Image (cartoon, rainbow, N blue to C red; front, side):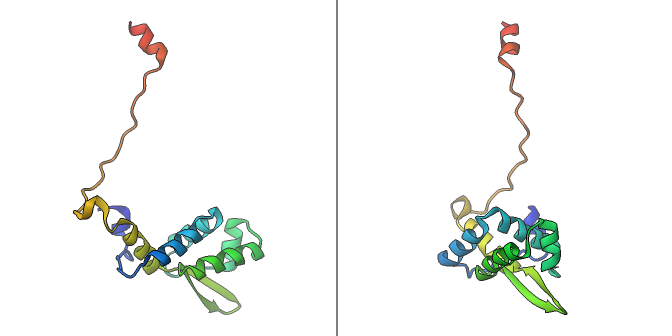
Length: 133
């Protein structure tokens, strides 16, 4: 079973429409936002306070605020007040819906086989080939 399939929050919800997918993909198409989102996915359902995200990202609070707003607008984050901090969490249901939308017609609509692990191909140098001749 793939890594995502074994994640406890992975469940495809067939509610993703093209416009929602484009909005989510657009938000993730920036390296800082993608890094923040991945950090929050790895943090789990409890999320992280904005200050800790800024520290880990080594990003000014104003820049982080802009990126968090874009991810939130795309439906990829939720937030909650915790004392004086705002804690941000990944919305796994949106992430899973996006993954489901992207793979919905995978393999021509047939069940997909597990992808075999690829091993690196050994490429001989031209000199090694010449020395054999």
